[in-house]
Length: 638
Image (tube, rainbow, N blue to C red):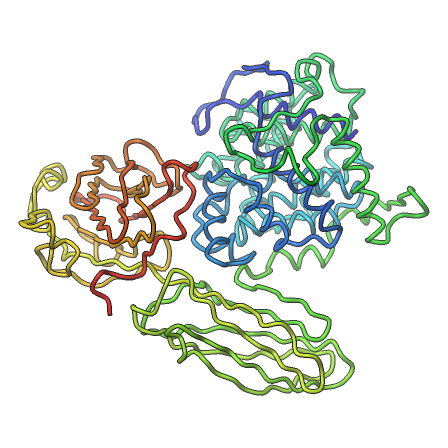
């Protein structure tokens, strides 16, 4: 069974077609064939998770996986890159997957579910809990968490159940009924019950969970279900899932995994499996993966090795969870395959809680909405202390700040009843702009009376991005095209040497802080006209070739250090990732020291509410986020 599943990790990549095409495809065979399959990030990342499980053990948690992200995964697509920037800024999961992540409802984690099913075969609750730890690293608070729970549960249960309707019932029990993922699954299943064709079922899924982003996970989960229910045989099922379109490597590969587990490798049609071979291809040659083929514990090179290593870890995991009867016998009751309250608790788990378990005293730090702070304001935190002991514990807490954050230092005492919890509310005064950096670490020390002191807990606060915005220049009857072409006073620079001063650009400017990549200008830019935004970037090293994006839903122009970078006269749908496109993103040098970026945005009458993001990444390093450049100050901040 395991070998059959791994073949379809390869097949999904081979069947992948262009992302985001709105109409169904007409693909009934591999559009491209390569020995070993086409390298695919969805498989590669699961090879990394196998490596992590081997090295960390069955106690593997999200914080462990975060380290493997930074060590081994070079990709920066969408949520991958945003999550890695958060990790580099010092955040831990789940906050790393929640904060500043437009893509937390996308397919990056549902496609990584198979490894968890294979190390917990016939035990979907165990598989789902590992899948949850995986998904919150880069999708916390999003629909994608539910998608990975759904897939992992079905794939794990498929080792002991073969009926697709029963497997769908089991999978659905792992998804909150109020979620968009549940709506998409229900729409696909109801269409099948109503005996409409698969293309009509596709339309119903799109109507139930509409979204313009091709990687939106509820839609793609619905397409998986369509392929499964409407497929007349193995190849037909895969192709119908793929022909629904959108994120086809994900839908085809996941459905192939379902079917591969149920059928087993020997029962899979030779027509589909033979072209793929046994070897595993990766993208390490150009940096998609790093440090995985040599050194300690390289990833598997072929399906036989992969299968053997997964089987070893499955026995290890099942033993650790106490579900093996003897050496290798697993007793499974059908009712135990369905989700229980322990799974339901994951549905509402906070995406802003970071847990620091300890046998002496459990600590949870709640960032309450965001870890980002604005100078001069207060930041509220909630610390939850759990006493696991049979008598009351009196605890002293001390929060320490430094490097301009000394005013955050505070302390107090709290009594925690036996086997109970207590909450401590912290109000942190944020210092002036000059003291606020990208990353601002504070340290929380918990001191139980007459017990060993626990290690200090990092509390990482991120500085908001520093901007200035112009006054709104009203349309006054001019068209958006006329406004776009018109040179207004912020563009009229008499001396470029002065752009690093507050008065260096003509016009009236006001301070603005953005807690994440989105520009909070909706209230300011509520009418037709032109608005300018400027920000200053501190590059502490040598000149960087940056990939800078004006991801706005309106016509825009952008300048870097007074040099024209890009312009686009369209009202596009925004997709604010690091990679962007050649129309609204451009390669520009960021010199050592201070740099100015100016964005001109134009809105005509009766146009959508403004949405805009300023995106910066490394043009020469797979569009990695630039976590080391300063974005919280201006040259004149003191």
